[in-house]
Amino acid sequence: MNDSSWGAPAGSGRGGPDQGPVPAGPAYDRQQAAQTRPMPIVPDVPAGGFQDGHGRGAAHQSGPLFRDETPHEHPQEPMPSPTPPPPPAPSAPRQKKSAGRNLGAAIGVGVGLGAVIIASLYIWPPAFVGVIAVAVVVGLWELTSRLQERKGIKAPLVPLAVGGAAMVVAGYVRGPEGAWVAMALTALAVLVWRMTEPPEGYLKDVTAGVFAAFYVPFLATFVALMLTADDGPQRVLTFLVLTVVSDTGAYAVGWRFGKRKLAPRISPGKTREGLFGAVAFAMAAGALCMQFMIDDGVWWQGLLLGLAVATSATLGDLGESMIKRDLGIKDMGTLLPGHGGIMDRLDSLLPTAPVVWLLFVIFVGSA
Image: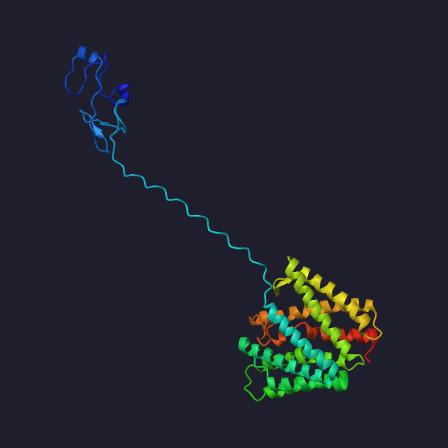
């Protein structure tokens, strides 16, 4: 072992065998100094270091001083036994894809409404005009109530309800001219009725009222216009069947295969695959209905009719979704279990009615 490891460096004052006397410290015999000096015993010192006999600092060494010296055994606390890992949590059962609504209630309500519609159509057609008028009044009530609750818009319900019902009857009795006159009078009644209240909010209230008059009763009047033809019940039933089939095809195909969103900012649940399903189902149903239910109808006309219905029904559904998203609601009402409100069922029917009426007039005439 080199003594420089434990002593001072060369030239620090301790002489070697052939060096002169040590300048400081006790006297040493040269002959004794020439002999190999034993390793000094290093006492335990604090961690800050120690000083040798001449006051010079020496580095503190950790660990044993000699190879045969064992470090001081410090008693150690027994290591705690390792805690066994918790058993893996059982994986949650895979949930089935939800359809998003109560199908049992929806089917039951749909069957009930269908029975009322078919009975009124074929037993006494004017009764179906009453069914349209009732649906219009309830739809106006739902729309105006949501506007007032969510936006503070007070569209006057009384002139809207009276004018809307009159609009449907006028269209059935007097044709398109009667519907337009009733629409104009309803708008005028909304303007006058709102004058009985303070002027604050007048513009937004009457604007919403005129919009509601056009959106609900005026568009519904085209269903009554279909009924005036000789094969009116068949035309109305074709219109209803194609709209329902389009909605069902979009729902079924989109629920099973839908991946690409159609309009995620408006209605996140609608997919492009669902739109293709709506078009395919509606075109097939249109070809069958036009060939076997409509007088002088041809199957290829039904293909075009089905395509138009699928397009207008989808746009109508998206339009009401925009209204509901602006209002911050999911459904317009809760009157129909599994469906929401009346307006949630009329959303695709209302904009489709004038499209179907116009195509019927083009293909087979209005009589």
